[in-house]
Length: 209
Image (cartoon, rainbow, N blue to C red):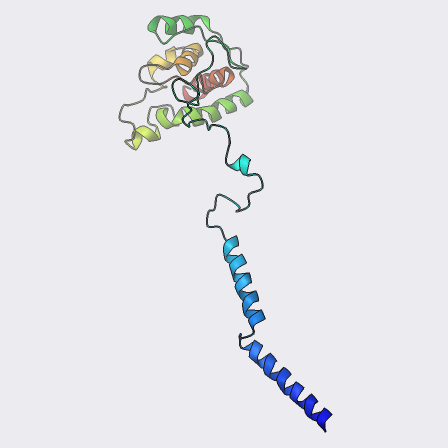
């Protein structure tokens, strides 16, 4: 009888413990839930630009000076320094003509486009024109680019399909792209010589036709 009573008591206690834990009052369950919630919340990262994991902190937070950051090492206090005088960037050759009337006329007369007039080169010229020129000069080359039409650029860009521009050779367009003209800035530092010729070819062979 004593044995049966003890088994009965144990059964009642076990049932009460299970019922007690099911209602969220078991200390172990509460601790586990708090731990899980803490880990879950700490793993959340609201910055969509990062995964939230830092495998190499010195690569994420550079130990070196960033390009546009102040730098006490140099006399002018800038990290970004101009190229050493007399050096030439790889793939670029010095352009001997300046942004003057005389040099523009000379370049138009002397320079020769050695890029073959093919469909592929014209297509590349169209793509490069769309990247560098269309915003000002317009899709058709009429000077009605988005920047001017939307009043973000008040000075009217030149029309590339005017009679004057139709009379100018490809070398003239190449020169203007390279060193700029009037208020137009130079693009020689941004566009390779090959793409400059292809843009000039596209203007002459497609837009001016």
